[in-house]
Image (tube, rainbow, N blue to C red; front, side):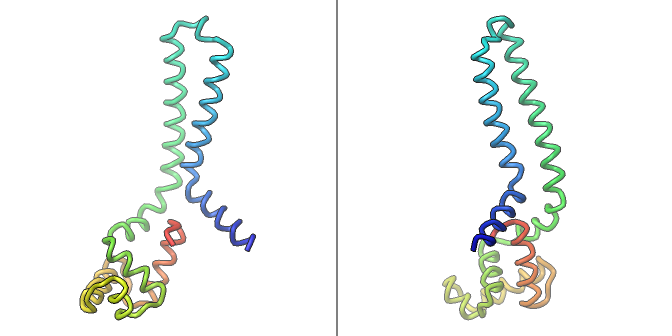
Length: 150
């Protein structure tokens, strides 16, 4: 159980590194600004210069985060767009297909006709480039693992 929790935590940190980095950067910035106010630096420096220094700090942080974000997200963009191309209903149908449910069970669970489920399944197959339920399940699990959507 502990290994599973550790694995999930590591996956979460890996997939949400940018958000965590922004949080830590914000916290460090707040602490830094409090230290600056304690040192009363702005009394010795004109207010305009003080504000410029703060603006430059945030600009630098933004540029660093932006380049880091592009490096970490760019490889996932092409695969993430596969799931993004599906409608909400198609995503629910795909998730149920991945869980091993039959078309009839999906129709009952989503309150739709059996023919509608078949139409959704065929659209899903064409959008994610698979030809059967097994491939769809495998593709969904692969994409879900990378995006933590399970």
